[in-house]
Length: 364
Image 1: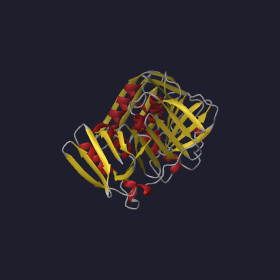
Image 2: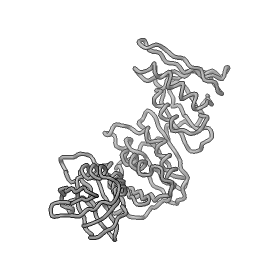
Image 3: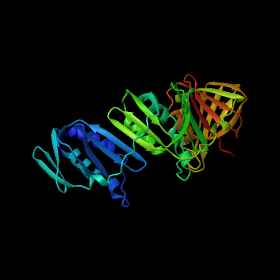
C-alpha cells in the first residue's frame, strides 16, 4: 500500500476511529486501527468488539493495500507532524511514513488478524436530522444506570413506532423520556449500550446533515457522511417504565427554569451528605422555597416565585438529579407535577412537546 494524504485529513480520521480503542492485553489486535484502501479511497477502521467504527479519508492512492497499526502510536505521530502532505508506504515489517524532513517506521500486525466489522442488513432505515437526534439522546442518557450488572437499564431504550422515535433512560430512581417525530410504519424496541450513545453524539458533533439510522434485532448502525458506526444491542427486556408515570397530579408548579436551576445549585452546596434539598410550595403565596442544611456547613433557603396550583406541601429531592435534567432543557419555563412526598415528581418543559423527566422523592 502507498498513499499520499494531508496531515489534517489523516489526523481527523484517526481521531474519529481512535476514541473507542482501549488498552487490552488479552486481544492486542484491538489496540490497533486498520488502514485499508478500497476503490481509490482510504478507510480507517477500529473496534472494541461491541462497537465498530469505519471512516473514509480523502487521499491519493498510488498502490492499494492494507496495514494494521497501533492506534496510539500512529495517532500521536500524525498529530505531531506539520501540516502538509504525508506519504505512507507499507514495508515487510510495517509502514514507512514521510513528511517534509520527517521519516518514521512503525511496526505492524497482520491485517488479516483484524476482526471483521459485520455488514448490517438495510431492512429498517430511518432518515433523521443529526442535531435533533443528538439533542434527544443527550436529554435522556444521563438518567441511565451506571451499574453495568444491569445491562438493560445501563443503556437507552429506543422505541420505534408510527407515533415517533422514543428515547428512554432510567436508573430506577429517575427516568427521562423524549419523543422525536419520525415517519415510519415499523415498530421495534431496542436497547442501545451507553457507550454507543455517547459515541453517536460525539460523531454527530456540530454536523447538521441528515443521517441514516439502521436497526435490526441485534445491531444498530449510524451512517453520517464518511463515517459509519455499527454496534451490538443489549440483549434483554426493558422494564415496563410507563406503568410508573402518573396520569394526573393534585399540584402543579410553574417556574422559571433558570431560577429553579440556580436555587438548586445554591442550596445544593449545603446538602453534600445525601444530595437532598427540600421544595416547599405554597398555593396561597405562589412561592416555592428551596432549602438545605448541614450541621457542618450551614444552611440555605431560596424563594422562587411562580404559579402554584392545587395543594401546598413539601417534598425532598436529590438536587443533582433535577439539575442534570434542567441543564438539558432549553425552555424558559418548567412545569413540576407533584402528587405527594412519596410518589414520582414529573418535570416537563412548558412549551416543548415530547419530553418528560421523572424523579422519585427522598423519603424522610
